[in-house]
Length: 205
Image (cartoon, rainbow, N blue to C red; front, side, top):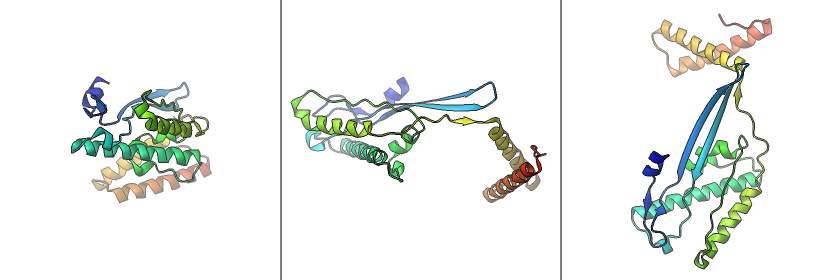
């Protein structure tokens, strides 16, 4: 966390002596295994978003202006994702920014998400406060449903191990393995697996 905080871009503007010039994301990955051998994957994102900025008031120029533009664009993309989720659209524009793509698994129904909105009591910030509260209202209207457990069963792990084994065999025989070779082996493996299941077998070799 100290390393990430130290790498975060911070600068001085007319509005804020210590203005965040970038978002900050800390991601923790946790892997566990239950008594049945099933693997469970978990991920925790701790996100501190830089605030939207009115460049006419902050009076930033040069690199500061580019930073503000990138921040505002990513926040706008996040707003578009929230709106699409609230409206239950079939297409959610996660790929419109690196921020929303990174946080996709936290916003797409596979997780529990908690968001805090920061507002200012200053009268000069009234417009931004209203805008922030409206965004928070949109966020609160999003229904993602129950978080789903990200679990890989023993059977899935066995199939993955068989894929790797087959890939290694082909590579050792041919002296190397291209992407097309791998795709061919992958298709053959699944066809062979379906045949095994049909015959009541459960081993590859």
